[in-house]
Image 1 (cartoon, rainbow, N blue to C red):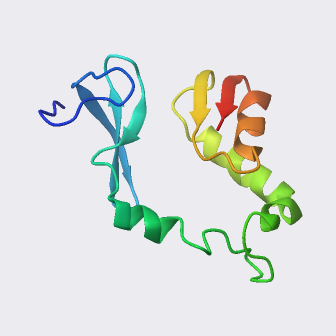
Image 2 (cartoon, helix red, strand yellow):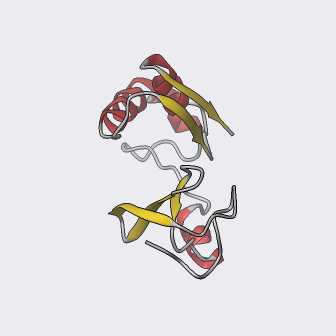
Length: 118
């Protein structure tokens, strides 16, 4: 898939391939550097709606914010292990942008990825 608009935010490449769609967003892969990203990028209003004051609310609704991650650590680790199994590869480099407490990075490294988070 080619896009005449904005290029890859990492390398500027304009060629990308559709990987999958999720929650109404297309996830594409830059054919030059391999970065996977949303295309098109969410608008400022969409980001505000996604990451507002109550971005994280624990399933039992007793905890709001990142404190809930710590109390539900094992549930998150299990969730992230399951998500990692769905990836097409089981190794390579992985960057988790918005890594929160780092459980996803932790689980990725545990199964062989070279993962970092910011």
